Amino acid sequence: MKPSTHGPAGSPDAAPESWDAGQRGLLLVLAGNMLIDSLEVSTAMVALPSIGRDLDLPLTALQGVVTGFALGFGALLLFGARVVERLGRRPVYLAALVGFAAASVAGGLAGGPALLIACRVVKGFCAALTAPTGLTIITTAYPEGPARSRAVSVYAFVGACGFTGGLLLSGLLTEVGWRWTFLFPAPVVLVLFAFGLRLIPGGRPDGPARRLDLSGAATLTGGLAALVTGIVQVPGRGWGSPLVFGSFTAAAALLAAFLLVERTAADPLLRPALLAHRGLLRAMLGAVTLNGSYLGLLLVATFQLQTTEGWSPARTALALLPASLPLVVTAPLSGRMIERFGTRRLIALGAPAPLLGYLLYLRALTPHPSYAADVLPAVLLVGVGFALCFTSLNVQAAAAVPAADRPAATGHYQTAVQTAAVLAPALVAALLLSSGVPGAHVAEGYRPAVWLVVALGALGPVAASVRPVRRSASGRAAEPRMTAPPFTRSPLDR
Image (cartoon, rainbow, N blue to C red):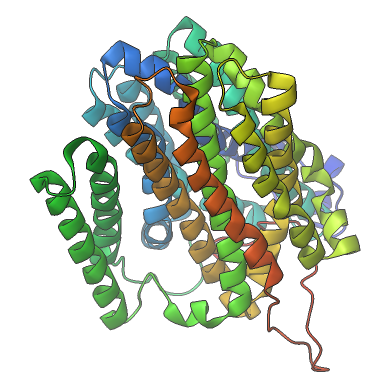
């Protein structure tokens, strides 16, 4: 049964209570899958030490479990939009659900790092197909007005809850066995697939499908993968190692090829003209530093608390929970906050908070730190920064470009955010390895990695201090305001 867009629910003023059964079921499927996608971002983090002990993996391989998902998501997000245009929303969405479930099972049963990381990349690509597609389906299946706004709000709120839920699930499931953190999505996704067969509507984006740009997607993905490989291999092998030299050479060649391909392509994935908008660049820089430094700190804290301090996965997850709870609490209020204070004020207020939290975490780098005095204030400040900046940066990125370019700008913005999730954990892992972590049971070994996180976090206030040059018709600087829930456009809406 496809969701109806006629009758009572088809009225522009239709309230969410007037949704028919098909529309309620469709939102359950889309939001449920969005929750699974966002859970994947954090489920692997707390499980890393247990994976390393069980499979005897070094940190060079373990970081790939985290960065692999971000690589598949970020590097292939714009490419995924082209796939949907070619094949249609319904078949791609359903195929991605099946692929996600299969990769979950294969990853949970993996006996080595190659298959485990490959499955994470596949799951990231599946999320790149379903997350924006689900949002597009909502904007076409629900009538414009309160009904659609409520559906989009539910979708965005569920996504904001995912990171928190992932930490909790990872902590609890790892106590039983780390493999369950990768296996548990499979049956849930298959149930969503069964309902999706009846409820997910067909349809393609308006206009002719664009070329896939396989060469652009391949060179970007390969270049980032080679760059990460070179970064994490430096501490153990040295700069003169053939593997390190070859990885960096391959990364330089592939990324240069990507830029050349995009420069000469008739319809490239990357649109350099968008990057000429300073407001978009400012928002991207703020989001990159926020996401990258946050994941870097979580990686440090996970290994310090579990490996050095001997905490259990569940206790570690609870300890890190305050870093994500403020965003969940404020997500339903984000629109009102932006309407009242504006994005610039919220970002200026929130950007320094994570930096202060990272600096405070330096106090925790002692044997047996106090959670209440050393760890909790740091993670709370990081959470406050996310709550104030996360939605504001998204809104600011979209508002910085003309309306016709906003879908493409959203895709570029999300690609940059996920690229930070690829590179920052790799750099942190390299510094931990160079300091003897996690083999050395000395908290001081974590200090260089935390200082890197501090340096990344310091770029946030810098981005917040640069005013956008977008101006209103009167010539005065225009302040982006939220006229609709965040994430109302996806790279699929052209």
